[in-house]
Length: 436
Ligand code: LLP
Image (tube, rainbow, N blue to C red; front, side):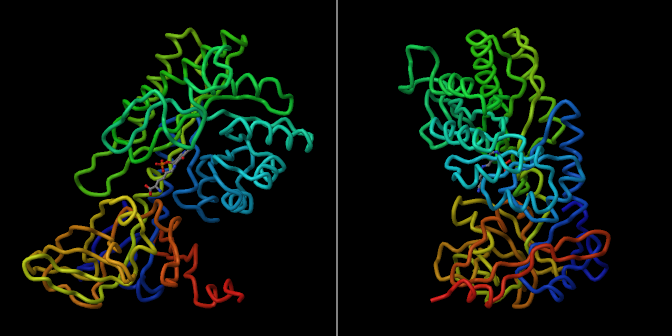
């Protein structure tokens, strides 16, 4: 987090608070979320895109009541992809018109909840869903604004992207191919547009595309924008209609290790605006309202996880295994995606030699790795506190109860004050679910 510093005694501070005091008061493992950092990042995104664009924070990265309040105050909108996320958003005062509902398999109950609440958009993901949303909106007497999610044939992750004719994955409707009336021209996406335009209870406002996550190279967005604008031009030619919105999804990468070099929001905004503007001018279209959906790039860098060191086991000639009191239950990303993180000793400074270490959790499997390769001081001992930065996104939100682990709390820090925003799970919480 931006507000990290050190005390004269050598321990690390976040938001003006000593991590040793935070660990003492709230226990470990502990997610520490820097509210000022989060809000600053929201403002950077909002300011970068300006008043003629919308920034939808992707709630799947991390969502809580406090986060929804901060987003609302900072002028961001919210992308949710389940009834659970939608409930948190509505219960915390996010105006429904600023909410978008996503998902490849929304249940009728979720659709009904969203239409009834009056969400600003539902992003349609299949032919069956077009019918389902239309029926529900019709029954509730609503005209629901919708976007159609298209697969642009670009898949981007980290430093690369690949462009293929069809993406072999579950989301969206392809621009080309498919069996839906190819004689009418275009692919499933063009056919979806035809079907939506025939339904009075749906108001088609735009086209949506999301090409991947942890992306550093904006050229994938360039191909996506080119193809989405191509569809907008086809829609104008076929239906005499210029759709007012285009959403290019999320996916902007963050620095997990010092080697990662992500772009700033203003660079991304300038690049996306330039690409969309150029493509629209080329196609003779008015530039639609642009929106994006960053999750990781807003909340990822704002939090760190604080662990207490337990067993330190040296394997001569190999490495030292440093066990901490959490693991794949509070950060599954290393085990699941081979994600890279860094780690530091934060309760004191040390002049001891660096030792090649692997930070592992306390779960009953050897894949339970938090940080695969790290150098930690050779005098590391049980009771030392370690912090893993950049754990704000997809860590608490993907936390689990493997081995009946209790999911750690999220503590928001700001100006020397700490506040629990998601409390630690208790054994009673787990036993309450177990009704057998
Ligand atoms: N919009 C849509 C439609 C998405 O599917 C996603 C992420 C986002 C926005 C936000 O993407 P972001 O800006 O956070 O990269 N669990 C994985 C990431 C899965 C992302 C899924 N969709 C991880 O931990 O890396």
